[in-house]
Length: 362
Ligand SMILES: [Mn+2]
Image 1: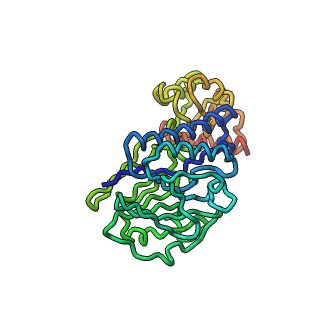
Image 2: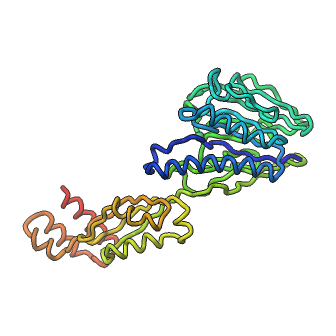
Protein backbone atom coordinates (compact mmCIF):
# COMPACT_ATOMS: atom_id res chain seq x y z
CA UNK A 1 0.00 0.00 0.00
CA UNK A 2 1.21 3.49 -0.76
CA UNK A 3 -0.17 6.88 0.17
CA UNK A 4 0.52 10.04 -1.76
CA UNK A 5 -0.24 13.72 -2.11
CA UNK A 6 -0.47 15.16 -5.60
CA UNK A 7 -0.06 18.89 -6.07
CA UNK A 8 1.28 21.31 -8.67
CA UNK A 9 0.64 24.74 -10.20
CA UNK A 10 1.63 26.52 -7.01
CA UNK A 11 3.24 29.36 -8.97
CA UNK A 12 5.37 30.45 -6.01
CA UNK A 13 6.71 33.96 -6.48
CA UNK A 14 3.77 35.13 -8.59
CA UNK A 15 3.32 38.88 -8.21
CA UNK A 16 -0.37 39.10 -9.14
CA UNK A 17 0.16 41.95 -11.54
CA UNK A 18 -2.81 41.04 -13.73
CA UNK A 19 -5.37 40.58 -11.00
CA UNK A 20 -6.10 44.21 -10.22
CA UNK A 21 -5.04 43.87 -6.59
CA UNK A 22 -3.52 46.79 -4.82
CA UNK A 23 0.09 46.32 -3.84
CA UNK A 24 -0.65 45.24 -0.29
CA UNK A 25 -3.15 42.55 -1.34
CA UNK A 26 -0.85 41.27 -4.05
CA UNK A 27 2.03 41.03 -1.60
CA UNK A 28 -0.17 39.25 0.91
CA UNK A 29 -1.33 36.78 -1.71
CA UNK A 30 2.28 36.11 -2.66
CA UNK A 31 3.05 35.23 0.98
CA UNK A 32 -0.03 33.03 1.15
CA UNK A 33 1.28 30.94 -1.73
CA UNK A 34 4.39 30.25 0.31
CA UNK A 35 2.40 29.47 3.40
CA UNK A 36 0.23 27.00 1.53
CA UNK A 37 3.25 25.33 0.00
CA UNK A 38 4.69 24.87 3.49
CA UNK A 39 1.35 23.58 4.78
CA UNK A 40 1.29 20.98 2.00
CA UNK A 41 4.73 19.70 3.01
CA UNK A 42 3.64 19.61 6.66
CA UNK A 43 0.47 17.75 5.67
CA UNK A 44 2.58 15.12 3.93
CA UNK A 45 4.72 14.69 7.03
CA UNK A 46 1.69 14.58 9.33
CA UNK A 47 -0.10 11.98 7.18
CA UNK A 48 3.07 9.99 6.73
CA UNK A 49 2.64 9.72 2.97
CA UNK A 50 5.08 7.74 0.85
CA UNK A 51 5.16 10.20 -2.02
CA UNK A 52 4.64 13.88 -2.67
CA UNK A 53 4.13 14.57 -6.37
CA UNK A 54 4.59 18.09 -7.75
CA UNK A 55 3.31 18.13 -11.31
CA UNK A 56 4.91 21.32 -12.62
CA UNK A 57 4.65 25.08 -12.25
CA UNK A 58 6.01 24.92 -8.73
CA UNK A 59 7.29 28.48 -9.17
CA UNK A 60 7.37 31.47 -11.51
CA UNK A 61 10.84 31.52 -12.99
CA UNK A 62 10.46 35.15 -14.03
CA UNK A 63 10.38 36.30 -10.41
CA UNK A 64 12.10 33.51 -8.50
CA UNK A 65 15.46 34.01 -6.82
CA UNK A 66 18.16 31.61 -5.74
CA UNK A 67 17.11 32.33 -2.17
CA UNK A 68 13.55 31.30 -3.01
CA UNK A 69 14.82 28.08 -4.57
CA UNK A 70 16.78 27.27 -1.43
CA UNK A 71 13.69 27.96 0.63
CA UNK A 72 11.80 25.41 -1.47
CA UNK A 73 14.64 22.94 -1.09
CA UNK A 74 14.88 23.40 2.69
CA UNK A 75 11.15 22.94 3.12
CA UNK A 76 11.13 19.78 1.06
CA UNK A 77 14.20 18.54 2.93
CA UNK A 78 12.17 18.60 6.15
CA UNK A 79 10.09 15.79 4.64
CA UNK A 80 13.19 13.60 4.52
CA UNK A 81 11.30 10.30 4.67
CA UNK A 82 8.89 11.21 1.87
CA UNK A 83 9.84 10.55 -1.72
CA UNK A 84 9.29 13.85 -3.45
CA UNK A 85 8.90 13.88 -7.21
CA UNK A 86 9.12 17.09 -9.21
CA UNK A 87 8.38 17.45 -12.90
CA UNK A 88 8.87 20.96 -14.25
CA UNK A 89 6.14 22.71 -16.21
CA UNK A 90 6.02 25.71 -18.50
CA UNK A 91 6.58 28.29 -15.74
CA UNK A 92 9.47 26.57 -13.96
CA UNK A 93 11.30 24.99 -16.88
CA UNK A 94 14.29 22.74 -16.33
CA UNK A 95 17.27 23.94 -18.37
CA UNK A 96 20.98 24.09 -17.84
CA UNK A 97 20.93 27.49 -16.14
CA UNK A 98 17.61 27.18 -14.32
CA UNK A 99 17.37 27.59 -10.57
CA UNK A 100 16.59 23.89 -10.22
CA UNK A 101 20.18 23.24 -11.27
CA UNK A 102 21.73 25.76 -8.93
CA UNK A 103 21.02 24.08 -5.61
CA UNK A 104 22.00 20.75 -4.15
CA UNK A 105 19.00 18.49 -3.66
CA UNK A 106 18.73 15.94 -0.86
CA UNK A 107 18.28 12.26 -1.72
CA UNK A 108 14.55 12.19 -1.08
CA UNK A 109 13.90 14.55 -3.98
CA UNK A 110 13.76 13.51 -7.61
CA UNK A 111 13.54 16.07 -10.37
CA UNK A 112 12.81 14.33 -13.65
CA UNK A 113 14.89 15.32 -16.63
CA UNK A 114 13.73 17.01 -19.79
CA UNK A 115 15.15 14.40 -22.12
CA UNK A 116 11.91 12.47 -22.39
CA UNK A 117 9.90 10.24 -20.10
CA UNK A 118 12.20 8.98 -17.39
CA UNK A 119 11.52 6.42 -14.70
CA UNK A 120 12.61 5.93 -11.16
CA UNK A 121 12.13 2.77 -9.18
CA UNK A 122 11.34 2.73 -5.49
CA UNK A 123 11.98 -0.91 -4.68
CA UNK A 124 10.96 -0.67 -1.02
CA UNK A 125 7.56 0.64 -2.17
CA UNK A 126 7.27 -1.75 -5.14
CA UNK A 127 6.60 1.39 -7.14
CA UNK A 128 7.89 2.92 -10.34
CA UNK A 129 7.32 6.58 -11.00
CA UNK A 130 7.55 8.03 -14.51
CA UNK A 131 7.89 11.69 -15.25
CA UNK A 132 9.12 14.37 -17.58
CA UNK A 133 10.15 18.00 -17.15
CA UNK A 134 9.64 20.81 -19.64
CA UNK A 135 12.71 22.68 -20.83
CA UNK A 136 10.94 25.55 -22.60
CA UNK A 137 7.79 27.60 -22.26
CA UNK A 138 6.14 25.80 -25.16
CA UNK A 139 6.24 22.13 -25.91
CA UNK A 140 4.76 19.92 -28.60
CA UNK A 141 6.92 16.86 -28.01
CA UNK A 142 5.52 13.45 -28.87
CA UNK A 143 6.37 12.29 -25.42
CA UNK A 144 5.34 8.63 -25.63
CA UNK A 145 7.05 7.90 -28.96
CA UNK A 146 9.70 5.61 -27.48
CA UNK A 147 7.83 4.55 -24.39
CA UNK A 148 8.24 0.89 -23.48
CA UNK A 149 5.72 -1.18 -21.63
CA UNK A 150 5.33 -0.88 -17.90
CA UNK A 151 5.87 -3.72 -15.46
CA UNK A 152 2.41 -4.60 -14.25
CA UNK A 153 3.76 -6.39 -11.19
CA UNK A 154 4.55 -2.98 -9.80
CA UNK A 155 2.61 0.12 -8.87
CA UNK A 156 3.12 2.51 -11.79
CA UNK A 157 2.62 6.22 -11.58
CA UNK A 158 3.06 8.97 -14.16
CA UNK A 159 3.55 12.60 -13.20
CA UNK A 160 3.37 15.10 -16.04
CA UNK A 161 2.48 18.69 -16.89
CA UNK A 162 0.40 18.90 -20.04
CA UNK A 163 -2.90 19.45 -21.76
CA UNK A 164 -5.36 16.60 -22.29
CA UNK A 165 -7.99 18.96 -23.70
CA UNK A 166 -6.33 19.96 -26.94
CA UNK A 167 -4.88 17.53 -29.45
CA UNK A 168 -2.65 20.25 -30.84
CA UNK A 169 -1.20 23.29 -29.19
CA UNK A 170 1.91 24.56 -27.48
CA UNK A 171 1.30 23.08 -24.02
CA UNK A 172 2.26 19.44 -24.43
CA UNK A 173 -0.93 17.95 -25.87
CA UNK A 174 -1.63 14.60 -24.24
CA UNK A 175 -3.96 11.97 -25.62
CA UNK A 176 -6.25 11.17 -22.70
CA UNK A 177 -7.49 7.87 -24.17
CA UNK A 178 -3.95 6.74 -24.82
CA UNK A 179 -2.93 7.63 -21.27
CA UNK A 180 -5.89 5.81 -19.79
CA UNK A 181 -4.95 2.63 -21.62
CA UNK A 182 -1.28 2.55 -20.70
CA UNK A 183 -1.87 0.67 -17.46
CA UNK A 184 -0.82 3.30 -14.94
CA UNK A 185 -2.25 3.03 -11.45
CA UNK A 186 -2.27 6.79 -11.25
CA UNK A 187 -1.58 9.70 -13.59
CA UNK A 188 -0.99 12.96 -11.76
CA UNK A 189 -1.43 15.88 -14.13
CA UNK A 190 -0.52 19.54 -13.88
CA UNK A 191 -1.27 22.58 -16.02
CA UNK A 192 -5.05 23.07 -15.78
CA UNK A 193 -5.65 25.14 -12.64
CA UNK A 194 -9.14 23.85 -11.94
CA UNK A 195 -8.97 20.50 -10.11
CA UNK A 196 -10.43 17.76 -12.31
CA UNK A 197 -10.71 14.19 -11.09
CA UNK A 198 -11.36 12.24 -14.29
CA UNK A 199 -11.34 8.95 -12.41
CA UNK A 200 -9.49 7.44 -9.47
CA UNK A 201 -6.59 6.90 -11.84
CA UNK A 202 -6.20 10.28 -13.46
CA UNK A 203 -6.54 13.83 -12.21
CA UNK A 204 -5.49 17.41 -12.51
CA UNK A 205 -4.71 18.56 -8.97
CA UNK A 206 -5.36 22.21 -9.87
CA UNK A 207 -3.72 25.16 -8.17
CA UNK A 208 -3.85 24.68 -4.38
CA UNK A 209 -4.25 28.44 -4.00
CA UNK A 210 -6.40 29.91 -6.77
CA UNK A 211 -4.63 32.70 -8.61
CA UNK A 212 -7.39 34.85 -10.12
CA UNK A 213 -11.11 35.14 -10.84
CA UNK A 214 -10.72 32.54 -13.58
CA UNK A 215 -10.11 30.06 -10.74
CA UNK A 216 -13.28 30.18 -8.68
CA UNK A 217 -14.56 27.27 -6.63
CA UNK A 218 -12.84 24.72 -4.41
CA UNK A 219 -9.05 24.40 -4.69
CA UNK A 220 -6.84 22.02 -2.80
CA UNK A 221 -4.60 18.99 -3.05
CA UNK A 222 -5.23 15.41 -4.07
CA UNK A 223 -4.79 12.69 -1.49
CA UNK A 224 -4.44 9.19 -2.85
CA UNK A 225 -3.93 5.62 -1.83
CA UNK A 226 -3.06 2.58 -3.93
CA UNK A 227 -3.73 -0.81 -2.40
CA UNK A 228 -4.16 -4.27 -3.93
CA UNK A 229 -4.29 -2.85 -7.44
CA UNK A 230 -6.94 -0.31 -6.53
CA UNK A 231 -6.44 3.44 -6.52
CA UNK A 232 -8.53 5.87 -4.51
CA UNK A 233 -8.20 9.62 -4.63
CA UNK A 234 -10.00 12.61 -3.25
CA UNK A 235 -9.69 16.35 -3.46
CA UNK A 236 -8.94 17.89 -0.09
CA UNK A 237 -9.87 21.60 0.04
CA UNK A 238 -6.70 23.36 1.09
CA UNK A 239 -6.70 26.97 -0.08
CA UNK A 240 -6.63 29.81 2.41
CA UNK A 241 -9.02 31.83 0.30
CA UNK A 242 -11.51 31.29 -2.49
CA UNK A 243 -12.27 33.47 -5.48
CA UNK A 244 -16.01 33.92 -5.86
CA UNK A 245 -18.10 35.57 -8.54
CA UNK A 246 -21.65 36.49 -7.60
CA UNK A 247 -24.44 38.38 -9.29
CA UNK A 248 -26.76 40.82 -7.54
CA UNK A 249 -29.89 41.74 -9.43
CA UNK A 250 -31.08 45.25 -8.76
CA UNK A 251 -34.48 46.71 -9.48
CA UNK A 252 -35.73 50.27 -9.79
CA UNK A 253 -37.19 50.26 -6.25
CA UNK A 254 -33.74 50.05 -4.64
CA UNK A 255 -31.79 53.09 -3.48
CA UNK A 256 -28.05 53.32 -2.93
CA UNK A 257 -28.23 52.29 0.72
CA UNK A 258 -30.30 49.21 0.02
CA UNK A 259 -28.01 48.17 -2.82
CA UNK A 260 -24.99 48.47 -0.52
CA UNK A 261 -26.75 46.46 2.19
CA UNK A 262 -27.62 43.73 -0.32
CA UNK A 263 -23.98 43.57 -1.37
CA UNK A 264 -22.91 43.17 2.27
CA UNK A 265 -25.43 40.35 2.64
CA UNK A 266 -24.17 38.44 -0.37
CA UNK A 267 -22.40 35.94 1.89
CA UNK A 268 -21.80 35.20 5.56
CA UNK A 269 -19.66 37.74 7.37
CA UNK A 270 -16.86 35.27 8.07
CA UNK A 271 -16.74 34.42 4.36
CA UNK A 272 -16.62 38.08 3.34
CA UNK A 273 -13.55 38.52 5.51
CA UNK A 274 -11.85 35.51 3.99
CA UNK A 275 -12.60 35.31 0.28
CA UNK A 276 -12.08 37.38 -2.83
CA UNK A 277 -15.31 38.56 -4.40
CA UNK A 278 -16.25 39.82 -7.80
CA UNK A 279 -19.83 41.03 -7.70
CA UNK A 280 -21.70 41.70 -10.88
CA UNK A 281 -24.56 44.16 -10.56
CA UNK A 282 -27.31 43.65 -13.08
CA UNK A 283 -30.97 44.53 -13.47
CA UNK A 284 -32.45 47.99 -13.57
CA UNK A 285 -31.22 50.86 -11.47
CA UNK A 286 -33.30 53.93 -10.73
CA UNK A 287 -31.96 56.84 -12.77
CA UNK A 288 -30.86 59.00 -9.81
CA UNK A 289 -28.89 56.25 -8.10
CA UNK A 290 -25.23 56.78 -8.86
CA UNK A 291 -23.40 53.49 -9.03
CA UNK A 292 -19.75 54.43 -9.03
CA UNK A 293 -18.21 51.02 -8.58
CA UNK A 294 -14.77 52.25 -7.51
CA UNK A 295 -16.23 54.38 -4.73
CA UNK A 296 -18.58 51.59 -3.73
CA UNK A 297 -15.71 49.09 -3.50
CA UNK A 298 -13.83 51.53 -1.25
CA UNK A 299 -16.91 51.91 0.94
CA UNK A 300 -17.16 48.13 1.23
CA UNK A 301 -13.52 47.57 2.06
CA UNK A 302 -14.15 47.32 5.80
CA UNK A 303 -16.70 44.53 5.22
CA UNK A 304 -14.82 42.51 2.63
CA UNK A 305 -11.29 41.12 2.50
CA UNK A 306 -11.39 41.97 -1.21
CA UNK A 307 -14.25 43.03 -3.43
CA UNK A 308 -14.53 44.32 -6.94
CA UNK A 309 -17.77 45.35 -8.59
CA UNK A 310 -18.86 45.24 -12.20
CA UNK A 311 -21.79 47.39 -13.19
CA UNK A 312 -23.95 45.72 -15.83
CA UNK A 313 -27.13 47.50 -14.81
CA UNK A 314 -29.30 49.52 -17.12
CA UNK A 315 -30.93 52.77 -16.10
CA UNK A 316 -34.62 52.72 -15.26
CA UNK A 317 -36.02 55.97 -16.64
CA UNK A 318 -39.08 57.87 -15.48
CA UNK A 319 -41.26 56.74 -18.36
CA UNK A 320 -44.00 59.40 -18.20
CA UNK A 321 -41.70 62.40 -18.25
CA UNK A 322 -39.37 60.79 -20.75
CA UNK A 323 -42.31 60.10 -23.05
CA UNK A 324 -43.55 63.66 -22.67
CA UNK A 325 -40.10 65.13 -23.44
CA UNK A 326 -39.71 62.93 -26.50
CA UNK A 327 -43.23 62.71 -27.84
CA UNK A 328 -42.19 63.52 -31.44
CA UNK A 329 -39.14 61.31 -31.78
CA UNK A 330 -38.25 57.65 -31.77
CA UNK A 331 -37.82 57.50 -28.00
CA UNK A 332 -41.40 58.62 -27.45
CA UNK A 333 -42.73 56.21 -30.12
CA UNK A 334 -40.78 53.39 -28.55
CA UNK A 335 -42.12 54.04 -25.06
CA UNK A 336 -45.72 54.20 -26.37
CA UNK A 337 -45.26 50.97 -28.31
CA UNK A 338 -43.94 49.18 -25.24
CA UNK A 339 -46.60 50.63 -22.93
CA UNK A 340 -49.22 49.05 -25.21
CA UNK A 341 -47.74 45.71 -24.25
CA UNK A 342 -47.88 44.51 -20.66
CA UNK A 343 -45.33 46.45 -18.61
CA UNK A 344 -46.07 44.29 -15.59
CA UNK A 345 -44.36 41.51 -17.51
CA UNK A 346 -40.69 41.57 -16.40
CA UNK A 347 -39.48 40.46 -19.81
CA UNK A 348 -41.25 43.34 -21.57
CA UNK A 349 -40.13 45.85 -18.93
CA UNK A 350 -36.51 44.68 -19.30
CA UNK A 351 -36.80 44.96 -23.08
CA UNK A 352 -38.12 48.50 -22.71
CA UNK A 353 -35.27 49.58 -20.46
CA UNK A 354 -32.61 47.88 -22.56
CA UNK A 355 -34.03 49.58 -25.66
CA UNK A 356 -34.11 52.94 -23.91
CA UNK A 357 -30.55 52.47 -22.73
CA UNK A 358 -29.44 52.05 -26.34
CA UNK A 359 -31.56 54.94 -27.62
CA UNK A 360 -30.48 57.35 -24.89
CA UNK A 361 -26.79 56.57 -25.39
CA UNK A 362 -26.95 56.56 -29.17
MN1 LIG B 1 0.19 26.54 -14.06
